[in-house]
Image (cartoon, rainbow, N blue to C red; front, side, top):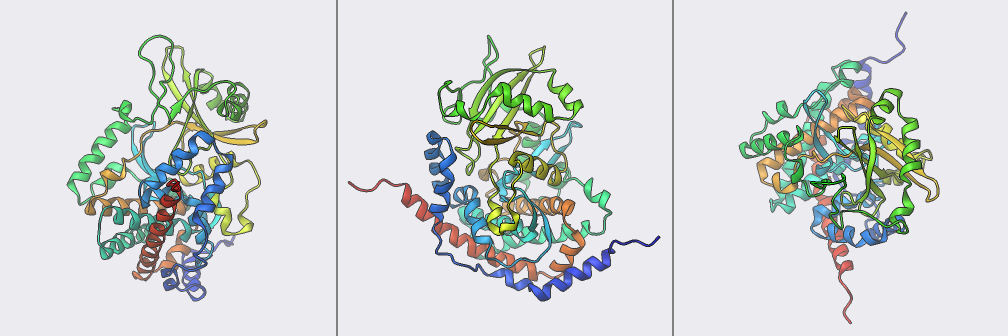
Length: 449
């Protein structure tokens, strides 16, 4: 019986043929109407957010251009709709910047490096969308670190090159081998040239295995005596009154019951070995601040804690790319299925629910604080280069699970033409981000009396 599926050689050739439609050099310019009002795009997102946290989001995004870029996924999605597309589609992350990657401990106590948040994930998106946002974030982070223009260009290109080379190596693997591929952090850090960064990663790996979790100010902590309750850490983590806006967004008893009913029987059995003991509101991220997000403290019979996060899922900003990408199903399910598609090892408690009275949809997951550090830990020039390359390789692995690595590899090719073009785009978008950030900070200042 002959196969009806194209061979690797066929797919590689098709990828090369796509260059005739979209030359690789076409990606080097930032095109489209850039006179759009970035502030207006961002302010529209505030309409459905918790009013008390809207100023927190504004302040976080005003800190520097990189913080602004992190919170402005909707702005970049709006801009990316005008950029050249290849036609090689993947399950996209949608918010693929440097700080949206993290280190996580598997049940086998291995430390994997992977994409962390999938709020904006969407299927059927051109692979260049994620890659351009990643490259732009490298350039903006490098600018914040005070690096020269040529160094910023070099670092952005290095991230793309790492993606291209990893995608090429993945294209030789079988679909099963690609699916089971992992980014083992301990092995990857041995490739780092920066000794200081290797030491920092070793510390972070120790934390990911359960040490020093109380050092994360944005992770819930429990009272030392008495009934197990989560400490308030306003404005990020707090209990709320029954008549407050936060209380109107979620009903722990009813909405968690719907989440439980959708779990696989084995996971449901595990969840049932815990009982909900406390429930708080938790502000998350930069761009997500103000969206409705809760943390439930579940305790086993022996007082062993399990933290589950219920995070609001709204429409993906990537829908701005093309009206055909609009997802009209359950937004929480969209996030869960996208995470399962892209992550090498998603947590078993992933699920979704909704609060009908408020019309809000949520996805549920284990609350993690095991991220791979902050920009201050990777901002030095060589450390940023190592980290950027690691993110590029990781994104390639995630894309290869849903996309065609041979097709994508065929398009990118063996030369550095694609790398250089995206590095050019990254610097152009870095400049635009600085303009947008300046306009944002100016908008936050009170008008003179």
